[in-house]
Length: 330
Image (cartoon, rainbow, N blue to C red; front, side):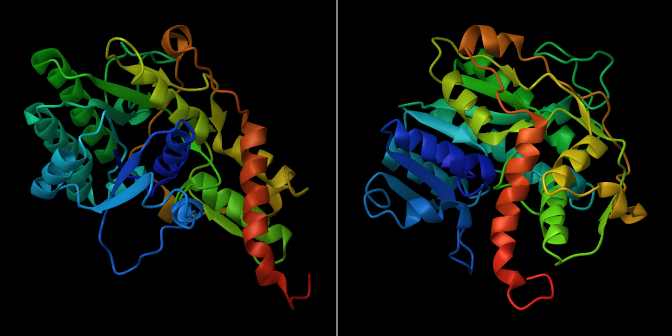
């Protein structure tokens, strides 16, 4: 069972589980739109959809429906990926962020606690729990000092997972994920804004890209690598928490450089800073130490930043090329 199955991580994890011959169930919100782009390939596969992949309607705060679904499906593994995950947006909607990211996790833990058949439980935590750490890189023992509403909500959820593991014996794990991107990243995230703009500018569809601070540093990995680690965590004999990271820190300007180089452009010619995109509080020195994951899960992030940026830009070019028909640069 996956919450957040329609998201970046959820869609990759669903594909990976299906490739391992799992029966996969996903919780989705009922909306006026039935489009779930990241699941399109699975949705239109007659050998998969409604045979090995099943979707169920439920919001994270609808505990009665979620309990009913879990009682019916009796999953062996429960991957909790859903929640408000945009750090910048969490300053604008802090209550919603805490309700779904924090309390949504607690409600799931309470349901699992009461089940006769308790699934192994994985919660997707975040490097944002560390905020402005005194040490770098960070590991599973680093003190949590969040500085964003999203980070605060994730800190609450992460500690609740640990509490339920220690107090109630749940097989519950935290995947403490550093930034991980892909072609399926939402367009409001800075990496996707950059790669989409680089592709559009190279195709003559856009002139400029406006961003906030270019000094922020992140530990960026590739999402499918990270979802593979999530699965590995639930195959271990005992539950535990793991930092998932590349161990390499890069400035936003470095990601810009890699993205625009992928289409033979210099980002300095196109990027403008806009104060509207500056965050009230910014994390610093967030770079992860995944030594424990490497030792116990036999896992290492394999995709470099230039490879990641190029992969995302080329995919965005492919998506935008149909718009070039009839333009001067066609």
